[in-house]
Image (cartoon, rainbow, N blue to C red; front, side, top):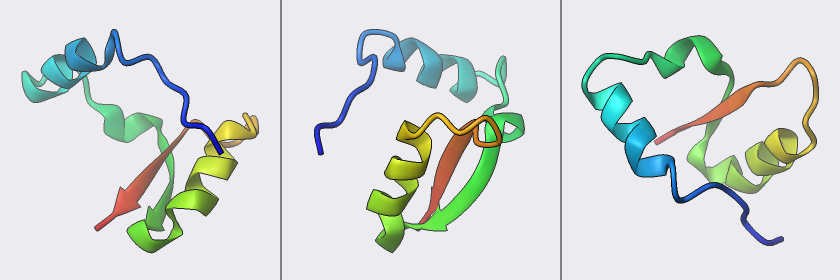
Length: 58
């Protein structure tokens, strides 16, 4: 399964979160253990309306 994403804007997003300007917690709709990373990615990639972002618990 190829990974997709926008690596061009990722550093800017990290900076916004680190500075406190943006709080990504309100976008997280699912938390999965890191061992289930493939399941989490498939859920995210399916673009289900009830799922916005998946966080991995380490």
